[in-house]
Length: 219
Image (cartoon, rainbow, N blue to C red):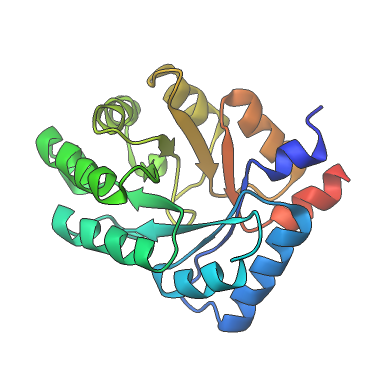
């Protein structure tokens, strides 16, 4: 059984709601510090606030890029990254260009991710595949492109798509990346059992808005 601290360090405590208020983000950051989570994950608008609130803590700040649909141009996403880093982001979760992937335009998918990786300047980049909208072969192809482009993680979902993380998808992603690349499972992870099943399947990070509930279960 995973211990409490180890589990906490796998969690990105998340609130990317479009109507999240200052009070909501203050609560998120308090909880992240209380439980020792790896990061909070917030929208670009809330990144500076989260960074300020967590300045003297061990909790990092993750923000989303090209969220939630991934339809921005590569240059737009790169600008979002630069702005996010200025505002204190430590990690960046970018949404894949699904239309380009469906169209077979692997060059665009690659350059879209690569622009973000370069703009990140070494900071951790996770590529959100939105697996619920992809065929099995597209999921595998997306993993290969993300790896080639230099991303550090592939991530299952935005959490607001048609479906969230599944054990089957995490296992498929694990089979299609090199050992040094990691997986973030996100979407629908609301209890300890689900969290542990994702870790057992190969996820090294969990994106969830239910971090506190999960930690209460393990405690």
